[in-house]
Image (tube, rainbow, N blue to C red; front, side, top):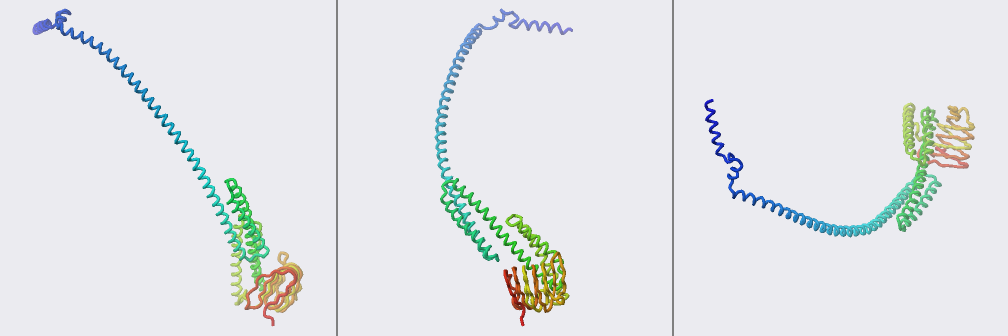
Amino acid sequence: MGWLVPLLILCIAASAAQPWSKGMDGAENAIPSSEVENVDERSGGFESFKENSTDVRKDIEERVKEFRKLKRSETKEKWEKAKEEYSEVSKNMREWAKEKAGEMKEKAFEIRKQYYLTWVVMVEKWIEKLQAEINELSLASDVKEEIAERLAETFEKLEEFKSEINESDSPEDLRGVVAEIREVWKDLRYELRASVHSYAVEKFRHLYERLEQVRDRLEAQSVDTSELDVMLSDINDTIGDLEKAVGTPEFEGKVKEAKDLFAEAFEKVKEIVREREEILGAKVLGYESGIAYAKVKGSFTLSGNFSHVLIKGEGNVILPKENIVTKVERDGELHIVARGQLTASGDGEFRIIAIGKGTLDLSGEGYYRVKLSPKEPMGNETEFSGNESLQFGVIE
């Protein structure tokens, strides 16, 4: 504790030496008077500065307002000018677009006219090609004439259409002509399709007849044709379906079905012939003699020497018993197989095939085919109405 007393004395002495130790009066005496005056002057200058700065700020604000006002005015002028220029450009663009649109419409109209003219020419070319193909077909003369007449009328109508297309002045006129063309084309396509389909049916009927003739020749030689008979029945039904589908999209499918059935039937014929020839050691469907084949609704007389004869149908037949090989009735139809020197006659509806040499007299209506001799080809089908006398084979 001895050190505390000297420390207190030292602190008291230091405090007495400071200006504030004399009180406020002492403090004032401690600051020089010149310094006090300077402080007062500075206080007055600050107030003056405040006033000056306020004026400057107001001046700046006024200038800013004027500047903004000026800028708004300039901007408005520029905007108005730009607006006028835009309006002028827009107007010019509309006028240009209107002018060009008219030109483009006219050009499009002419292109459309050329398109339909070309289409009509293509239809004419198609009809010319079809006409050439029809001329090559084995159609009945009346059918050919009917188709040719229809095509000629169509050609005349197409020429009228070309004139109407060229003379049309507006899209409305052109649309009217085109609508009429489409209607005519629709009818024409149906008619031509129906004609072609009818021709196809006729060809299938003809092929069916040939297949029946082959079957009859086999049957005349006492060959079992029961399987072939079933196939022929199916083919006949399919041809009936074809006739119902003439002129429709379903026709093509029926054609394929008929072709497949014919292919199977002819394969069956080949199979039967091969088996028969292996047994006999000779040709079954050879042309070793004359042949007469006929379908008649009326009456017939057959006379000569024959290796094979087949008479089938409905009616009355007179034939020597000693020449009959088989005589049966199937589904209400008479089937007679005979051979040798004979004379046969009948009244009704019959199919007759005779292989050998002799004569066949026909009365009524139907068709026939004749092979005059082994060296000559089988003749084409010939229709008849009335009386016909056929001679075939080598006549001694």
